[in-house]
Image 1 (tube, rainbow, N blue to C red):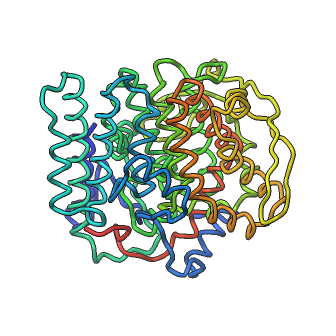
Image 2: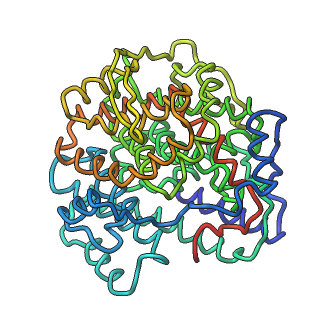
Image 3: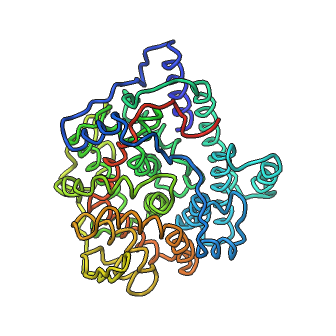
Length: 472
């Protein structure tokens, strides 16, 4: 996978330098429809976003609940950045690769990745040397040595990517171009390399399902980055790879539908996680939790621009279950899934009662019973359910204004960070906690929330500079 990814990066570099037209990868002008999604893109092109972007910016959380969590875990420096700490110390642990000290080593590998990826903003020579000492613990077993080698392969991929991007730092782009791929499996393996979780690969299912799941953790992340990736002409934008360069609403709905099919393939027909996909489902869900509780991506601003599009997504078949090859031909043409692959979600009402800006909202939503069980038993904080599902659905249903919604999300995202991290450790990252988190995130996808996020993100599809979302 890493080898394929680096080969494709080199071809992208050759295309950018005008040495080839590209055979496996092509630079493509995006197709735009006369529809709701196209309207958001046109607003961006007209300057509605005023140059704003948060992608790849490390944000801090000054609120006291987050500071208390950081202090209780002894987090400082780069480790105390919320998106780093949630990624390395919560997301990695939710995967359940081990139930002993080795899980801490896997988390250290993830931290090494986050630190390396953000070294231009968070690093110095001393911390780099300290990290190398953590990385090179003596007398590791073969399994941990293999995981370390996997992460080194992934870092080699990102090193190639960022060196190539550095050569393009002054290249202007219009927010109209993306990268498309000739071969489905080439793209899948390159996206797996671009997903940031190679330290967990041994915990994934063997063969094609494992490769698909590695890709999927990156794909779910890319839904919130569509617009920013057009602005920066990101070579690893997987949603636009699936649509073959189209942001026509129906094409994006095809891609959303198939993203959910692949997520559902990690579940049993009863909508609980398959044993062989436990780590994959955990990391797929955790990626979405990571996105919605930090300002690296402006997911709730994007969502507030297009909550009406949830209905368009829920009009599709979001309960089929299929692997990538059952969803797309080898040239990434969408196809219907096998008839036998379906899930049935066991749902029941879960009450909510919260205040936003002094106004009380109460009622109930039908949700996966694992989420309801988790909230009612206290395994999952009710506030996580309200932040991640109730408030977005209230906005979708017109019961709260976009302004009130956004102000509340901005005021409480640090609290949400604290709830996420502390709840994981309080529950011991148990199987019940895992199923509650999976239930919460999958409900978001089944309710079309991430389609609205993706559509709203197109407000960032404005002229910019290649790979200018970070320093080099």
